[in-house]
Length: 112
Length: 108
Image 1 (cartoon, helix red, strand yellow):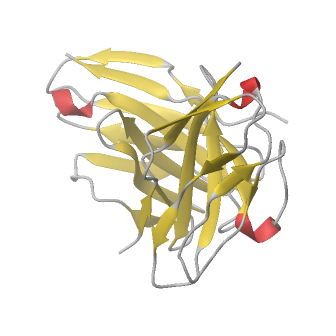
Image 2 (tube, rainbow over the protein chains, first blue to last red):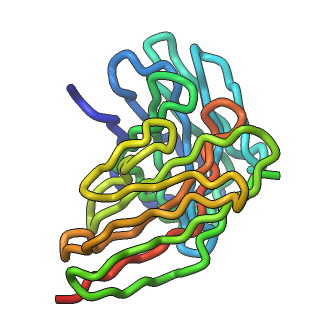
């Protein structure tokens, strides 16, 4: 059974640009969540999607957005990148509420 | 507000010694608690869930609602247990609130 797949693994972007990250969940998992991991703030919840609907949202500015497709694949977008957006972005999928997540390897975003 | 506190940034023990990684939480509802582990250069992975009351790799964790704690324990540490451990609370569906994490170093 394939795990959670995130692409790309690494990205370098310039301030002011925008970026799109992709996540393919485990087959059959309908809930997909995104987290930002930084040394200073740790793991912070961005948003969760279930059946193409955003069900939960964390405390991030509107520059951070996401969506989920009918096949449960998800994308997150960050517009007008800032240096502070440099982080490891993790995607996770779950089979059911409160069942625990399976995480992907993450996308390492560096903003210069 | 939901909050998870892991008071130790680093816990260093000798091989064969008992391990206890502390986790305290703040949540007004009925919590679902997890321990996740991240070994060096590997992805974050679920270690155990409180609701399943299982033992994984010799680790156990008991939910103490009176003390709002969910400490992770292992009677005899092994070198391969060295990793970053995160305690997490599930709130509002599938949103996970993580603690800051504790690095466990098992010395030979």
